[in-house]
Image (tube, rainbow, N blue to C red; front, side):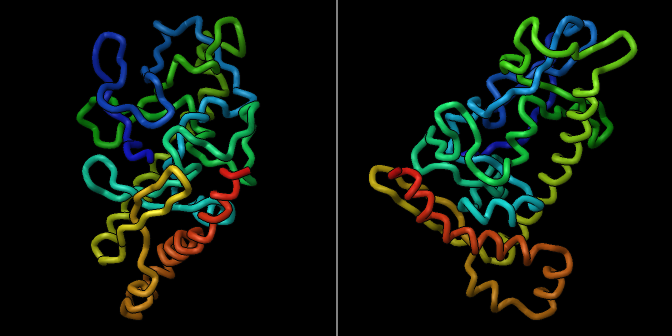
Length: 251
């Protein structure tokens, strides 16, 4: 499963991101007006670029939408914090929510897919939380001669402005979702789980619903008010989707 969603600091003459890249990203470079003056961008018509992943990191605001059609799980990220993922297949490289043409088959498209090929990189400046926009320039969204210019004489394109805003909001939600995972771990609510289907099995962290029910009323009330309880219940409810995921695989 995907376990490393964090963007790394930009470095080097080409300002490429160092370290392990997030799932889906073959490369990532900070967008620069001088070096990318001729770069064009066109949104992809399908999600074939995600055919090789069986899980995607997700954020709290998506839990209820995703729990209606696919399992949600928690996995250990780099650094040890649990992160939430949507499970899209049992075997490595298996995505059961794409058809042969790369069309998404679920009723809701995860934000991680909608963000690609853009992402945020730490600027490397002392200012905490300072990010710059980067992109996987190997993506077909940047095919030569297609789409609109990324940089214009009077500023960046509307697409890039939208991408920056989307990525900033998404980064904030990722931070909140990581805090959700840490809180569950600190409360002792995470359990080791395994699901299998024929020749493949997955190990992940689930939420102990009985331990959740035994939490002190004060804490439950706090979690109800800040949205954590609804998120935890969505993860628990999504466990019913393992059978339908297996059915997709058999079909």
